Length: 454
Image (tube, rainbow, N blue to C red; front, top):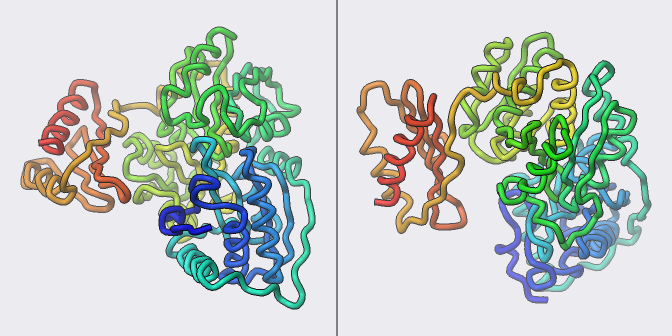
């Protein structure tokens, strides 16, 4: 096929429509290029439940084997299960998934041994360039001694490892509704929850990459509606929703109300700091709630603020030796999980915290949800730079207001802040605002939007 790899090789992964933008032949070239660029003599490969995933995954494995790498195929898995395999086996890995994207998409998330991320600055650009060259010139001949393909089960070991990182021995019985969205949560939740004092109410656990019930993207409120209705109807203690590859988790309380990912970040941070003797660094991106650094300091830790994006979080985790990191998008990163993100481990922390005391979840998380946020608001603009300059001009020099440029422009007052970030791929500016109360947040949000859209 003729492919424009610049359209499918993104900053952190490969993602595009199958077979329009990429196919098994190209997956084979990516496999060969991955082995070549990493110099790996062995790799581990897994895939999600999308119809195209098994074929793409096997083609990648054969491409890597043709370059001399022995390939361990772990079959159906969540993204964090692949990270577990990469960490436990100390092998570079490839996960075939398009996460929350619609069914016609597929992609590859790549990592080096120990689940270290591969992005555009850490090998993905070289992989793309090599695949482009082979597309133009033809695939290289297999090496004289190609690698082998073998299968390995990792699901039970993955589940046991996660349970070893959270003390669940004394939690009270809980009723939990889990919406897997027909994604990989339906595969991983049963063994992870096995043996715990939980009454599990499964929703959409059937693995189906066509997503017949709703998109597997809990970040979109429309995809949480079924779970929000089911939790109070069942008299459940909480609900948990996973995205398609089950590396992110979203939580709703006993009333069906969503719990902010920032509140979950703060809750888990407090627990991880307690596990670490009341000290340690916790990473948070700059559009998580101010609650997060407050709670980290209150519990003896050191908060470190980063740009938005998992590559920045993981890089800072490694640099600082952080014990935990969280994002507003419900990605949660753990030192004890090779600095990789795992929504399942965050979910276990929530269950342990709730089950370790008698209050309902809404009361438990109230202490971690201290401010009012706008959520992310996107605006199409003709000139991103000019609009950011207009915001700077409007606020620069005001008393009690600070500005910083860590990621886009952040403007902060005594009891409020907002951040405006340009999209890298679309003519958009993304606004996030937060304040101590609804009236202040609304005022600050509307002031910023008037300038952005002026």
